[in-house]
Image (cartoon, rainbow, N blue to C red; front, side, top):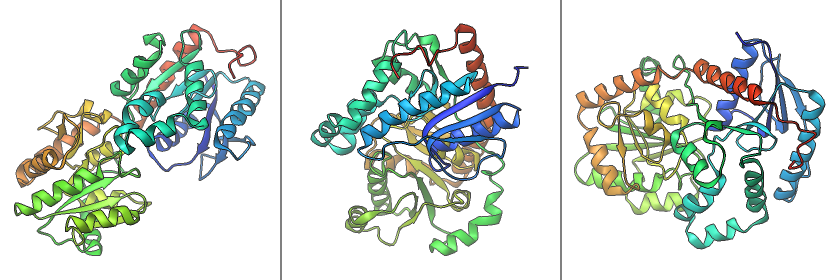
Length: 395
Protein backbone atom coordinates (compact mmCIF):
# COMPACT_ATOMS: atom_id res chain seq x y z
CA UNK A 1 0.00 0.00 0.00
CA UNK A 2 1.35 3.44 -0.95
CA UNK A 3 2.33 5.70 1.93
CA UNK A 4 0.27 8.80 2.65
CA UNK A 5 1.04 11.53 0.11
CA UNK A 6 0.78 15.29 0.23
CA UNK A 7 -0.96 16.15 -3.04
CA UNK A 8 -1.51 19.60 -4.55
CA UNK A 9 -4.46 19.70 -6.93
CA UNK A 10 -4.01 22.73 -9.19
CA UNK A 11 -6.77 24.34 -11.26
CA UNK A 12 -8.08 27.81 -12.01
CA UNK A 13 -11.54 26.79 -10.83
CA UNK A 14 -12.72 24.07 -8.48
CA UNK A 15 -16.42 23.21 -8.57
CA UNK A 16 -18.61 20.21 -9.38
CA UNK A 17 -20.37 21.35 -12.58
CA UNK A 18 -19.15 19.71 -15.75
CA UNK A 19 -17.45 16.45 -16.64
CA UNK A 20 -13.82 17.38 -15.92
CA UNK A 21 -14.72 19.27 -12.76
CA UNK A 22 -16.88 16.40 -11.56
CA UNK A 23 -14.03 13.95 -12.13
CA UNK A 24 -11.77 16.15 -9.98
CA UNK A 25 -14.36 16.14 -7.19
CA UNK A 26 -14.61 12.34 -7.17
CA UNK A 27 -10.82 11.95 -7.26
CA UNK A 28 -10.28 14.40 -4.39
CA UNK A 29 -12.90 12.58 -2.28
CA UNK A 30 -11.31 9.20 -2.98
CA UNK A 31 -7.77 10.37 -2.19
CA UNK A 32 -8.80 12.15 1.01
CA UNK A 33 -10.82 9.10 2.05
CA UNK A 34 -7.74 6.91 1.54
CA UNK A 35 -5.76 9.03 3.99
CA UNK A 36 -3.81 11.25 1.60
CA UNK A 37 -3.32 14.95 2.41
CA UNK A 38 -5.03 16.84 -0.40
CA UNK A 39 -4.59 20.56 -1.04
CA UNK A 40 -6.62 22.57 -3.56
CA UNK A 41 -4.65 25.37 -5.21
CA UNK A 42 -6.97 27.51 -7.29
CA UNK A 43 -8.16 31.00 -8.15
CA UNK A 44 -11.76 30.11 -7.33
CA UNK A 45 -12.76 27.24 -5.03
CA UNK A 46 -16.53 26.77 -4.82
CA UNK A 47 -18.91 24.25 -3.34
CA UNK A 48 -18.65 21.67 -0.59
CA UNK A 49 -15.44 19.67 -0.19
CA UNK A 50 -14.33 17.07 2.31
CA UNK A 51 -13.43 18.79 5.58
CA UNK A 52 -9.98 17.18 5.41
CA UNK A 53 -9.18 18.98 2.15
CA UNK A 54 -7.05 22.12 2.58
CA UNK A 55 -7.86 25.11 0.36
CA UNK A 56 -5.36 27.65 -0.98
CA UNK A 57 -7.05 30.49 -2.87
CA UNK A 58 -4.52 32.11 -5.20
CA UNK A 59 -5.15 35.80 -6.03
CA UNK A 60 -5.06 36.51 -9.76
CA UNK A 61 -5.39 39.43 -12.12
CA UNK A 62 -9.01 39.28 -13.26
CA UNK A 63 -8.77 40.78 -16.74
CA UNK A 64 -7.79 40.24 -19.48
CA UNK A 65 -8.14 36.45 -19.44
CA UNK A 66 -4.68 35.76 -20.85
CA UNK A 67 -3.12 37.79 -18.04
CA UNK A 68 -5.27 35.93 -15.52
CA UNK A 69 -3.75 32.65 -16.74
CA UNK A 70 -0.19 33.96 -16.51
CA UNK A 71 -0.70 35.48 -13.07
CA UNK A 72 -2.23 32.22 -11.84
CA UNK A 73 0.74 30.17 -13.07
CA UNK A 74 3.24 32.45 -11.35
CA UNK A 75 1.42 32.61 -8.01
CA UNK A 76 0.33 28.97 -7.99
CA UNK A 77 3.96 28.00 -8.58
CA UNK A 78 5.07 29.93 -5.50
CA UNK A 79 2.25 28.44 -3.43
CA UNK A 80 2.96 24.85 -4.51
CA UNK A 81 6.74 25.27 -4.06
CA UNK A 82 6.25 26.43 -0.47
CA UNK A 83 4.12 23.36 0.32
CA UNK A 84 6.80 20.81 -0.66
CA UNK A 85 4.20 18.36 -1.95
CA UNK A 86 4.90 14.81 -3.03
CA UNK A 87 2.69 15.22 -6.11
CA UNK A 88 1.43 18.18 -8.10
CA UNK A 89 -1.65 17.22 -10.08
CA UNK A 90 -2.97 19.79 -12.56
CA UNK A 91 -6.59 19.60 -13.64
CA UNK A 92 -7.55 20.33 -17.29
CA UNK A 93 -4.43 22.39 -18.17
CA UNK A 94 -0.71 21.72 -17.50
CA UNK A 95 -0.13 24.80 -15.35
CA UNK A 96 2.82 23.44 -13.36
CA UNK A 97 5.30 20.58 -13.85
CA UNK A 98 3.90 17.29 -12.59
CA UNK A 99 0.81 15.31 -13.52
CA UNK A 100 -2.02 16.77 -15.60
CA UNK A 101 -5.44 15.27 -16.24
CA UNK A 102 -6.16 16.64 -19.71
CA UNK A 103 -9.90 16.19 -19.33
CA UNK A 104 -10.75 18.59 -22.14
CA UNK A 105 -8.20 17.11 -24.50
CA UNK A 106 -5.31 18.76 -26.34
CA UNK A 107 -6.05 22.47 -26.81
CA UNK A 108 -4.20 22.61 -30.12
CA UNK A 109 -6.21 19.65 -31.41
CA UNK A 110 -9.41 21.41 -30.33
CA UNK A 111 -8.49 24.72 -32.02
CA UNK A 112 -7.31 23.19 -35.29
CA UNK A 113 -9.57 20.19 -35.74
CA UNK A 114 -12.76 20.74 -33.72
CA UNK A 115 -13.44 24.47 -33.51
CA UNK A 116 -13.63 25.09 -37.31
CA UNK A 117 -16.43 22.50 -37.51
CA UNK A 118 -18.12 23.97 -34.46
CA UNK A 119 -18.21 27.69 -35.40
CA UNK A 120 -16.78 27.88 -38.92
CA UNK A 121 -13.20 28.44 -40.17
CA UNK A 122 -13.21 32.26 -40.05
CA UNK A 123 -14.48 32.57 -36.48
CA UNK A 124 -12.22 29.70 -35.44
CA UNK A 125 -9.17 31.52 -36.86
CA UNK A 126 -10.12 34.68 -34.99
CA UNK A 127 -10.10 32.73 -31.73
CA UNK A 128 -6.88 30.94 -32.56
CA UNK A 129 -4.98 34.23 -32.88
CA UNK A 130 -6.43 35.75 -29.70
CA UNK A 131 -4.01 36.36 -26.82
CA UNK A 132 -5.89 33.94 -24.54
CA UNK A 133 -5.62 30.97 -26.88
CA UNK A 134 -2.04 31.82 -27.84
CA UNK A 135 -1.19 31.85 -24.13
CA UNK A 136 -2.77 28.43 -23.58
CA UNK A 137 -0.97 27.02 -26.65
CA UNK A 138 2.32 28.40 -25.37
CA UNK A 139 1.65 26.71 -22.04
CA UNK A 140 1.04 23.38 -23.79
CA UNK A 141 4.24 23.69 -25.83
CA UNK A 142 6.29 24.39 -22.72
CA UNK A 143 4.90 21.49 -20.74
CA UNK A 144 4.33 18.90 -23.49
CA UNK A 145 7.88 18.40 -24.66
CA UNK A 146 10.38 15.62 -23.93
CA UNK A 147 12.05 17.52 -21.07
CA UNK A 148 8.90 19.06 -19.68
CA UNK A 149 8.66 16.74 -16.65
CA UNK A 150 4.94 16.29 -17.36
CA UNK A 151 2.93 13.10 -16.97
CA UNK A 152 -0.44 13.16 -18.72
CA UNK A 153 -3.64 11.36 -17.76
CA UNK A 154 -5.86 11.10 -20.83
CA UNK A 155 -9.43 9.96 -20.23
CA UNK A 156 -9.59 8.00 -23.50
CA UNK A 157 -7.41 6.71 -26.33
CA UNK A 158 -9.04 9.38 -28.50
CA UNK A 159 -7.67 12.02 -26.13
CA UNK A 160 -4.24 10.37 -25.86
CA UNK A 161 -3.86 10.13 -29.63
CA UNK A 162 -4.78 13.80 -30.05
CA UNK A 163 -2.06 14.86 -27.60
CA UNK A 164 0.64 12.64 -29.09
CA UNK A 165 -0.29 13.79 -32.59
CA UNK A 166 0.84 17.33 -31.80
CA UNK A 167 3.45 17.02 -29.03
CA UNK A 168 6.58 14.83 -28.69
CA UNK A 169 5.91 13.64 -25.15
CA UNK A 170 7.42 10.20 -24.51
CA UNK A 171 4.37 7.92 -25.04
CA UNK A 172 4.85 6.02 -21.73
CA UNK A 173 4.20 9.30 -19.92
CA UNK A 174 0.74 9.65 -21.48
CA UNK A 175 -1.57 7.16 -19.76
CA UNK A 176 -5.24 6.40 -20.38
CA UNK A 177 -7.40 6.36 -17.26
CA UNK A 178 -11.12 6.27 -17.98
CA UNK A 179 -13.56 8.28 -15.91
CA UNK A 180 -15.72 6.48 -13.41
CA UNK A 181 -19.39 6.62 -12.52
CA UNK A 182 -21.43 6.47 -9.33
CA UNK A 183 -23.49 3.39 -10.16
CA UNK A 184 -25.56 3.72 -6.98
CA UNK A 185 -26.72 7.24 -7.83
CA UNK A 186 -27.23 6.41 -11.52
CA UNK A 187 -29.12 3.15 -11.63
CA UNK A 188 -32.14 1.54 -13.36
CA UNK A 189 -34.04 1.48 -10.04
CA UNK A 190 -34.43 5.26 -10.33
CA UNK A 191 -37.18 4.67 -12.90
CA UNK A 192 -39.54 3.41 -10.21
CA UNK A 193 -38.85 6.52 -8.12
CA UNK A 194 -38.70 9.32 -10.65
CA UNK A 195 -39.94 8.31 -14.11
CA UNK A 196 -43.69 8.92 -13.94
CA UNK A 197 -43.51 12.19 -11.98
CA UNK A 198 -40.77 13.64 -14.20
CA UNK A 199 -42.56 12.74 -17.43
CA UNK A 200 -45.82 14.24 -16.13
CA UNK A 201 -44.01 17.46 -15.32
CA UNK A 202 -42.49 17.52 -18.81
CA UNK A 203 -45.84 16.61 -20.41
CA UNK A 204 -44.46 13.46 -22.06
CA UNK A 205 -47.07 10.74 -22.38
CA UNK A 206 -46.39 7.07 -21.74
CA UNK A 207 -46.55 6.13 -25.44
CA UNK A 208 -43.79 8.50 -26.55
CA UNK A 209 -40.10 7.63 -26.56
CA UNK A 210 -38.08 10.26 -24.69
CA UNK A 211 -34.59 10.95 -26.02
CA UNK A 212 -32.30 12.59 -23.45
CA UNK A 213 -29.49 14.99 -24.41
CA UNK A 214 -27.13 16.25 -21.67
CA UNK A 215 -24.55 18.91 -22.44
CA UNK A 216 -23.80 22.61 -22.14
CA UNK A 217 -22.26 23.28 -25.57
CA UNK A 218 -25.21 22.49 -27.85
CA UNK A 219 -23.28 23.04 -31.08
CA UNK A 220 -20.24 20.90 -30.34
CA UNK A 221 -22.24 18.15 -28.67
CA UNK A 222 -24.56 17.78 -31.66
CA UNK A 223 -27.98 19.06 -30.62
CA UNK A 224 -28.58 20.40 -34.13
CA UNK A 225 -28.29 17.03 -35.91
CA UNK A 226 -30.34 15.43 -33.12
CA UNK A 227 -33.20 17.87 -33.67
CA UNK A 228 -33.10 17.12 -37.40
CA UNK A 229 -33.07 13.38 -36.69
CA UNK A 230 -36.17 13.60 -34.49
CA UNK A 231 -37.92 15.68 -37.15
CA UNK A 232 -37.15 13.00 -39.73
CA UNK A 233 -38.17 10.17 -37.42
CA UNK A 234 -41.43 11.92 -36.55
CA UNK A 235 -42.26 12.15 -40.25
CA UNK A 236 -42.08 8.34 -40.33
CA UNK A 237 -44.57 7.94 -37.51
CA UNK A 238 -42.16 7.59 -34.58
CA UNK A 239 -43.31 9.29 -31.37
CA UNK A 240 -40.04 10.82 -30.20
CA UNK A 241 -39.57 13.61 -27.68
CA UNK A 242 -36.32 15.32 -26.66
CA UNK A 243 -35.33 16.32 -23.13
CA UNK A 244 -32.39 18.75 -23.14
CA UNK A 245 -30.43 19.12 -19.91
CA UNK A 246 -27.85 21.88 -20.06
CA UNK A 247 -27.66 25.65 -20.45
CA UNK A 248 -30.37 28.05 -21.52
CA UNK A 249 -31.27 27.51 -25.19
CA UNK A 250 -31.24 31.14 -26.36
CA UNK A 251 -33.24 32.49 -29.33
CA UNK A 252 -31.10 30.71 -31.93
CA UNK A 253 -32.13 27.29 -30.65
CA UNK A 254 -35.75 28.12 -29.97
CA UNK A 255 -36.04 29.40 -33.56
CA UNK A 256 -34.46 26.22 -34.88
CA UNK A 257 -36.82 24.05 -32.86
CA UNK A 258 -39.79 26.02 -34.18
CA UNK A 259 -38.55 25.87 -37.78
CA UNK A 260 -38.38 22.07 -37.57
CA UNK A 261 -41.90 21.89 -36.17
CA UNK A 262 -40.71 20.47 -32.85
CA UNK A 263 -41.96 23.13 -30.44
CA UNK A 264 -44.23 20.62 -28.68
CA UNK A 265 -41.63 17.82 -28.74
CA UNK A 266 -38.58 19.46 -27.15
CA UNK A 267 -38.21 20.29 -23.46
CA UNK A 268 -35.27 22.47 -22.35
CA UNK A 269 -34.82 22.07 -18.59
CA UNK A 270 -31.53 23.96 -18.08
CA UNK A 271 -28.90 23.00 -15.52
CA UNK A 272 -30.29 20.63 -12.91
CA UNK A 273 -28.92 19.36 -9.58
CA UNK A 274 -30.56 15.96 -10.05
CA UNK A 275 -29.82 14.63 -13.56
CA UNK A 276 -30.62 11.10 -12.37
CA UNK A 277 -34.32 12.02 -12.53
CA UNK A 278 -34.04 12.77 -16.24
CA UNK A 279 -32.11 9.59 -17.03
CA UNK A 280 -34.96 7.77 -15.27
CA UNK A 281 -37.55 9.58 -17.39
CA UNK A 282 -35.80 8.81 -20.69
CA UNK A 283 -35.92 5.78 -22.99
CA UNK A 284 -32.80 6.59 -25.04
CA UNK A 285 -29.72 8.73 -24.43
CA UNK A 286 -28.24 10.57 -27.44
CA UNK A 287 -25.04 12.64 -27.57
CA UNK A 288 -24.02 12.97 -31.25
CA UNK A 289 -20.94 15.02 -30.38
CA UNK A 290 -18.37 16.36 -32.80
CA UNK A 291 -15.69 15.88 -30.12
CA UNK A 292 -15.69 14.82 -26.49
CA UNK A 293 -12.60 13.19 -24.94
CA UNK A 294 -14.92 11.32 -22.56
CA UNK A 295 -18.47 12.58 -22.01
CA UNK A 296 -19.36 11.58 -18.44
CA UNK A 297 -23.05 11.93 -19.18
CA UNK A 298 -22.79 9.00 -21.58
CA UNK A 299 -21.44 6.72 -18.86
CA UNK A 300 -24.07 7.99 -16.41
CA UNK A 301 -26.76 7.09 -18.94
CA UNK A 302 -25.29 3.62 -19.35
CA UNK A 303 -25.22 3.13 -15.57
CA UNK A 304 -28.87 4.19 -15.54
CA UNK A 305 -29.70 1.34 -17.93
CA UNK A 306 -30.25 3.41 -21.06
CA UNK A 307 -29.16 2.48 -24.57
CA UNK A 308 -26.84 5.24 -25.77
CA UNK A 309 -26.46 6.74 -29.22
CA UNK A 310 -23.21 8.63 -29.78
CA UNK A 311 -20.37 9.14 -32.24
CA UNK A 312 -16.90 7.72 -32.64
CA UNK A 313 -15.59 11.16 -31.58
CA UNK A 314 -16.81 10.54 -28.03
CA UNK A 315 -14.13 8.75 -26.03
CA UNK A 316 -16.83 6.68 -24.31
CA UNK A 317 -17.38 4.96 -27.67
CA UNK A 318 -14.24 2.97 -26.87
CA UNK A 319 -16.23 0.94 -24.31
CA UNK A 320 -19.34 0.62 -26.49
CA UNK A 321 -19.92 -2.38 -28.74
CA UNK A 322 -22.28 -0.93 -31.30
CA UNK A 323 -25.50 -2.89 -31.41
CA UNK A 324 -24.90 -4.54 -28.04
CA UNK A 325 -24.74 -1.86 -25.34
CA UNK A 326 -25.37 1.17 -27.53
CA UNK A 327 -25.11 2.49 -31.05
CA UNK A 328 -22.12 4.40 -32.45
CA UNK A 329 -22.17 6.63 -35.52
CA UNK A 330 -18.80 6.36 -37.28
CA UNK A 331 -19.14 9.46 -39.47
CA UNK A 332 -19.88 13.07 -38.53
CA UNK A 333 -23.37 13.40 -37.07
CA UNK A 334 -26.16 14.12 -39.54
CA UNK A 335 -29.91 14.10 -39.16
CA UNK A 336 -30.27 11.19 -41.57
CA UNK A 337 -27.60 9.05 -39.91
CA UNK A 338 -28.96 9.69 -36.41
CA UNK A 339 -32.56 9.08 -37.46
CA UNK A 340 -31.54 5.60 -38.64
CA UNK A 341 -29.98 4.81 -35.24
CA UNK A 342 -32.91 6.21 -33.27
CA UNK A 343 -35.27 4.11 -35.35
CA UNK A 344 -33.30 1.00 -34.32
CA UNK A 345 -34.13 1.89 -30.72
CA UNK A 346 -37.84 1.82 -31.50
CA UNK A 347 -38.03 -1.91 -30.81
CA UNK A 348 -38.72 -2.21 -27.09
CA UNK A 349 -37.06 -5.59 -26.58
CA UNK A 350 -33.86 -4.49 -28.32
CA UNK A 351 -33.83 -1.20 -26.47
CA UNK A 352 -34.13 -2.90 -23.11
CA UNK A 353 -31.47 -5.48 -23.98
CA UNK A 354 -29.01 -2.73 -24.92
CA UNK A 355 -29.86 -0.88 -21.71
CA UNK A 356 -29.13 -3.95 -19.57
CA UNK A 357 -25.82 -4.49 -21.38
CA UNK A 358 -24.96 -0.80 -20.96
CA UNK A 359 -25.51 -1.08 -17.21
CA UNK A 360 -23.22 -4.10 -16.99
CA UNK A 361 -20.51 -2.22 -18.90
CA UNK A 362 -20.78 0.83 -16.62
CA UNK A 363 -20.38 -1.28 -13.48
CA UNK A 364 -16.78 -1.98 -14.57
CA UNK A 365 -15.90 1.72 -14.14
CA UNK A 366 -16.21 2.72 -10.47
CA UNK A 367 -14.51 5.92 -9.33
CA UNK A 368 -12.35 3.82 -7.01
CA UNK A 369 -10.66 2.28 -10.05
CA UNK A 370 -9.94 5.76 -11.44
CA UNK A 371 -8.31 6.73 -8.14
CA UNK A 372 -6.22 3.54 -8.02
CA UNK A 373 -4.96 4.07 -11.57
CA UNK A 374 -4.12 7.69 -10.72
CA UNK A 375 -2.10 6.61 -7.67
CA UNK A 376 -0.16 4.22 -9.88
CA UNK A 377 0.80 7.13 -12.15
CA UNK A 378 1.92 9.09 -9.08
CA UNK A 379 4.15 6.15 -8.19
CA UNK A 380 5.67 5.97 -11.67
CA UNK A 381 6.34 9.70 -11.72
CA UNK A 382 8.02 9.68 -8.32
CA UNK A 383 10.20 6.75 -9.34
CA UNK A 384 11.24 8.64 -12.47
CA UNK A 385 12.11 11.75 -10.45
CA UNK A 386 10.01 14.57 -9.03
CA UNK A 387 9.72 17.81 -11.02
CA UNK A 388 11.56 20.69 -9.35
CA UNK A 389 9.38 23.79 -9.30
CA UNK A 390 12.16 26.04 -8.13
CA UNK A 391 14.55 24.90 -10.87
CA UNK A 392 11.91 24.87 -13.62
CA UNK A 393 12.29 28.00 -15.74
CA UNK A 394 9.16 27.48 -17.78
CA UNK A 395 6.69 28.57 -15.07
